[in-house]
Amino acid sequence: MWTDCMTMRVVITAILMLSAAPTMRAQSPVDSSLAAYIARIRAVDNHTHVNSLAPVDSESDALPLDGLPAFPLPDRLRSDSPAWIAAYRALYGYRYDDLSASHMNELRAMMKSVMREQGNRFPEWVLDRIGTEVMFANRIAMGPGLAAPRFRWVSYVDALMLPLSTRSERAASPDYRALYPLEDRLLGRYLAELHLAKVPGTLDAYLRTVVTPTLERQRREGCVAVKFEAAYLRALDFGDAPLATARRVYARYAVGGVPTHSEYKDLQDYLFRYIARESGRLGMAVHIHSLEGAGGFYRAAGSDPLLLEPAFNDSTLRGTTFVIVHGGGMYAAHTSAMFWKPNVYADISMMSVVYSPTMLAGILRGWLTQFPEKVLFGTDAFAGGPDAGWELAAWIGATSARHALAIALTGMMRDGEISRARAEEIAMMVMRGNAAKLYGLKLN
Ligand SMILES: [Zn+2]
Image (cartoon, rainbow, N blue to C red):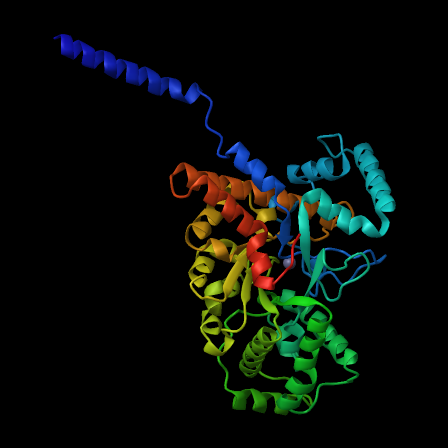
């Protein structure tokens, strides 16, 4: 009887404790001293479209999306998102929680005065404010205010893959209609830089006198990587097209006419692998856009990193380092599968802006559990309008990425998967160490 009574008391006490539990303060998902440690790490941002100080900077993206038919933006990219107000407050001392017209006028005046005060140092001032030591600038060309070692160039190479008429390719989607002409124009610029008026008549001459010299020039001018935005133009299924086929297609249409889609795909596939191989030879990594957006006619299915597996498995490309930029987005688990290839990495750019820290933390935890040496910090900072300069997106991405990393590593520590020391080591790797190793950067 007595023991029954005791049992009953234990049960009642347990029930009382359980029912009291929800009213107790929930444990924060972030270890505050680990978060403070991560906040102090000087970062390498693997991917941005930082603006130069040129009065009208039209070189920050080879495929700016302003020309696309209108499409909805994810919530965190909308101008009334709390993320932007937080960025205004952190960078410019904005004092409000709303975006009323008079407050916005005050903000614009403040932005102007900071720009004027900082002058040519503005881009570096931003890096100091957000804790970034080195920012990669994925741009058509560098420009005033963007000097090494703080800013490093990542060029564009899709145009080199498109030497023939893109007329029938464009017809396949309203987005393509807007984007292909931009690649035609960029190829024209690359040709002009080589003092050529048009592409040569044979593939061999094109490779020797256009593709390789352009990549060599980019390397000479400080390029650390080249970037493919191909998923905006086609699927990422780059096959292993025979040289003879590529030669035949090229020679037939270099002089005029429009290749069929399958003919052009063979040539593009050959050129993709050639460009990747040459980039590796020259010591430049190959960045590839992989994400579920952007655009109302964008083909998310074509940007799955698994489509890149045949190219990643090409043994002649093992001297080339590939970086899946934006981490594949919704395909993050597929990206993780590609980490088994010794030369494949990924960054968290754009995910750090459009996903919440909690969402991104889930992705990071999966990746960091298996391949922590393959994960790179990134923001994809770009200018989204007159009140949304690149520096604001850079702040949002950097703040959110650090928060996400703290959540993921705190979870791993609390579940006994890693020690405190290892959590700090992984944070350092993601924020800067992995990039330093991959690109051979000398950091402070
Ligand atoms: Zn980008």
